Amino acid sequence: MHAVGSVILEGLLNADGGGYQGKKILEDNGREYEFMGYLNKGVLTVLGEVQIKRAYYYDAVSKEGCFPKDKVLDCYVPPIRDRF
Image (cartoon, rainbow, N blue to C red):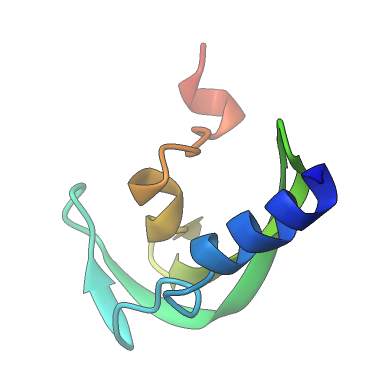
């Protein structure tokens, strides 16, 4: 039964097509990021592992990337340098 639940959950999490927000986005930090493509993220849930399709954006000036969908789903993990 858990396997069926994880398939349904994965479908719901990916119903937005990956969270694409346009060719360029402006983040809260004031930087402009350009869409580069999609990357998957495995997340372990009580129903099993699900793969979340996420739009990836990159800022060539700061050489940093971001996944806006991570913030929406509250699964954002800051870079190591920002944790200390």
